[in-house]
Image 1: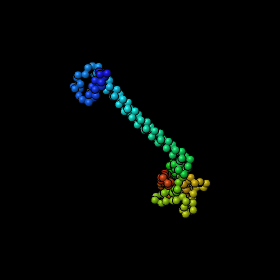
Image 2 (image 1 turned 135 degrees about the vertical axis):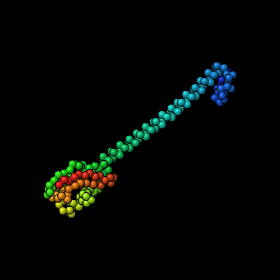
Image 3 (image 1 turned 180 degrees about the horizontal axis):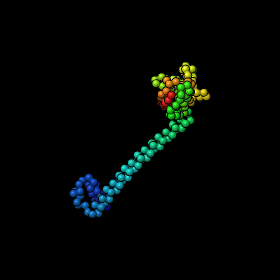
Image 4 (image 1 turned 120 degrees about the horizontal axis):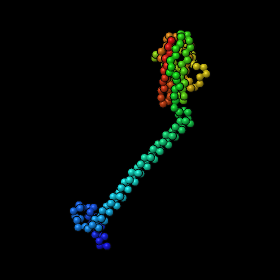
Length: 183
């Protein structure tokens, strides 16, 4: 019992004071001190590793929660068309015409939008106004549903040549696409 107490005392001294003060300790005592220190070091390593592992697990749970939230948001957008992503279905290929021919400027919309118009050399042609007959030689495409922002120029002149840009406004964005009329 006395030898064990002596080893414990020396192990405390070994941890607290420089080694040259413990020269009186025999080899069994030094081995016991070394084992005690090694055990404490192993416990410390295990605690640190567990802490790091817990942090990694927490990060993984956070990522899983983010994925669940993103999935739920996408699911809601699919179920509610008003929140769905709006996109243009538009052929950007130019159109070649002769004076007097009819030109159809198609601009179809997939999803919901608040308004749309065509722009040509700074002039804006609201599709809703085209429907009312406010612009000569223009009309809305027949059989066009709510998803179209298309117009027809019934009697093309050289003034109609150039770039035409379809602008679709949604609550989140402004979508544009252009095509060229060559007369």
